[in-house]
Image (cartoon, rainbow, N blue to C red):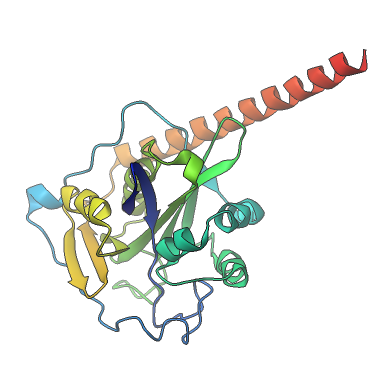
Length: 261
């Protein structure tokens, strides 16, 4: 997760860096990325006590809902609400609406994980994409076992300053561990000092290359506790969303009924 201060407001935004192996993976062509550096720093392990540290999420609990292929339209609507500058921060390059369409269409929900936070009106205000790095891992398959997963997040203006990006970051760490990933990688602009501080606090090794920085967080193995926590969080978030959905529509029905009398 990345945060940039704009005036007195914290802006939480993380670019997910496209990979050379899949130049159109995030809706960007090789020409779009020609100006980006070719260097890809390798993960550097921290001492055991540092690398297993986890950042503290804000107090309280916020439901984080799992998003699936049926939510593509809502994810697209969320990203299209970002202005030009926010899109640049999210993807690390200027992107058009057409490129965002391609990115959303390319998300592989069988391999990657996508999470969302909804506001009281059930509008999607924050989205995180936990993407498996392309290619085969050390186990010779296409899973995330023993390799890195990449984290990217976007938060709409109305949801900023509430710690939603941090919540999604902590949430993603648990899910990456449960997918047996060895590292979680966050790509950010070097000017995003708040993001890099969050990554460093979590025990990540940070590599800088010109305007870009990559933070590599060594992940401890998954446990029964991480799987149980993930399942309970998902069930609770889905339940709360469905209750809010029904309450909201009952409220609208009552208003229509009162207006017609």
